[in-house]
Length: 332
Image (tube, rainbow, N blue to C red):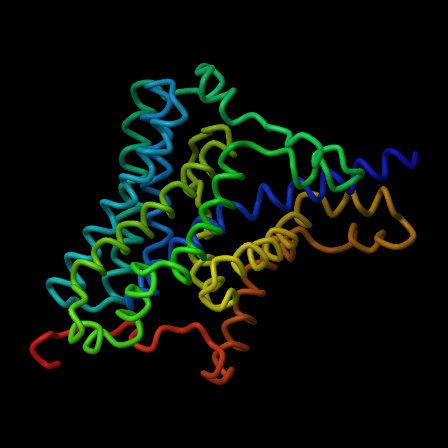
């Protein structure tokens, strides 16, 4: 009986990671974009485009690597479109981002329904995709009691997401290109005056950040076994990722913690009843919580985060000073 309880806890921890990783991709990608001074509200649509193309191309080529690269490339192309409209043509960033969400979701359903009408690729039919998405236990760490299998036995995209978050933190804080990017996000006019190519910096990092978002969408598609239906695989995660950027204070490492918290609340929706059965004396009340509340919890927490951070003082915040402001070089 005791082992069963430990198994429930292990499964709960494992599922937290499963639910938080796509949010991590979206959040880290948006942090990179926003550090350039661009506010992109199209995360939902970008992740959807990366998901549908990454999954289809990955299956047809029977290659996990090709799927990842395709998802990144399609996300980057969406970023290129955003950059062309907001950086070169000076379009309103908020409206452009919302338009990308609509465009991306439309493309997701258009391509998905078109492929489904012919022959939808079933993930289990492609050995390289199926095996490539299987859990890989980290020797030693995965043997730690209770938390070992929960935290250190996951598929390759989970580990890739953590590595990307750590690399982006190092890039933003310890490299010359990363510091130049932050300078552009804080004061593009000053950055321009010391020889930094503002337009090129924005283009490169908007595409990079959106490419990372695309991989997160691909992960969600694989996590749902590639089952295409009337509901989008992304299911609002893109909007939560936008809010998590603020929660993480524009810090990729803090994004790991922030998305883990959101993954915890999301996992309650699936595993709350199991915890209630395993620990009736302390957690039995979880069984009485309506499923609808569990589904709404991530969005409720998102709203709370936005309210709290909106009244937080600027000191100590990682918010780029020029975020959302188009840069007119002639007005420098």
